[in-house]
Image 1: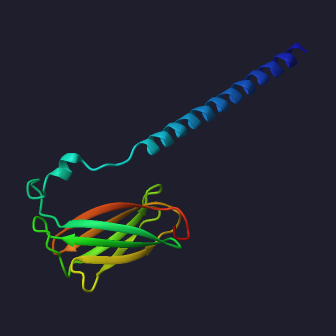
Image 2: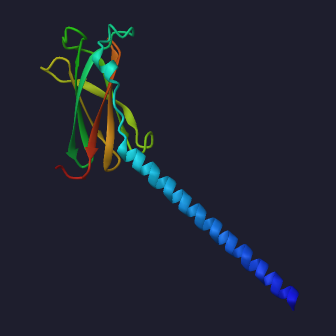
Length: 167
């Protein structure tokens, strides 16, 4: 009889140990997840101030085109992208360039990436290129515009798509 009691007590101790271990693991993972979410929400990527204030000629790298991006949610998960592309220094419009766009969901990088989306130059507006894209779901998207020719350049803009219908 005493051997049976000791066996049951040892089994109960082991059971309590594993319950405590699982509970501790769950609490630890939950705290790590909360900390990760707070860090993700609290930090936003920003461009370096020194790089933004220094013209491309003085930075020591190749000369890059200037790109001004406008992105607008049209409704039904459609996004219109417009890019005004100009030469550095003179800001003369760059015409007949190879310009493409990419969309990428900020919360799930590379999962909902689209592109290259070929951008067409708008007739009567030199240096202005347009394209439309349909994103996969509601959320914040990073729109990247790349000029491939005549001089390479790249710029980004964020857009928030928060409803299926237009605002």
